[in-house]
Image 1 (cartoon, helix red, strand yellow):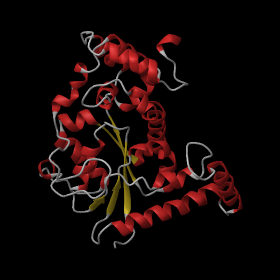
Image 2 (tube, rainbow, N blue to C red):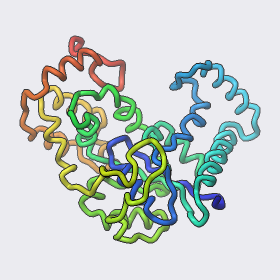
Image 3 (cartoon, one colour):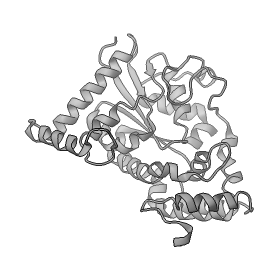
Image 4 (cartoon, rainbow, N blue to C red):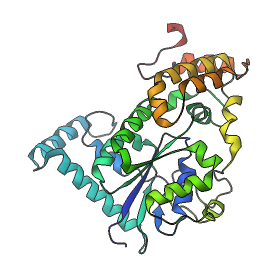
Length: 310
């Protein structure tokens, strides 16, 4: 077991290149990782009344924890510090001697990003952004089915939380766009490694994924399929978001994210809208999209509405 190590958090919504980033960073001999540990989520959620479904009464648990926090010298900050100590001890036990960092890439950590920043003043925080249109298309999966209702938390709450947390983190964070990692991997991964205080070797861009990644979540290193530095992934969304229903929803989604948040992420609202408008519309999968929308609703940040309500 190492001495107490420093945590690295890769924070993004799913389908933003976080697995690729995790694989390349953890290929360095100073970094340990597991696929998606999740361990900080339930600890932080003891401070929240809502958001948990359990056999026990979570509202009662929350009241009990609230009593603990109110009785504890230092209050909530002290409680989160103890939670951080627990997480750090687990990271440290997982990390072999000689390594300095443990990388935690858990997709829903966007929900607790502000708490993580407070809990780990020495932590390293990598905020990873990707063109929202490419993210949406990737979320639909290989069969390109309209299933965004499964990702409402990520597309709305998580993106809002991540922008807010990255602003709060300021210079403590490293912000990087997926497109930059793909177009200029050597320069941008060198910037990430410099932020971490690690020496970057260009060979990592060739050898990542050769060591098996422990854990059941996410893709495994050493498997036949691994995320690649493929520039085709930057425009593949245009072959998915190409019918009127999808384009309409995407326009509304970009408007919801808004010019300010998109600018913070490194994108321009008008450019994304114009790019979407250039995609030729087809009738492909319209019937399927209508059926799924009628069944699951029109994905959004508020209570879902169906096409019949519009």
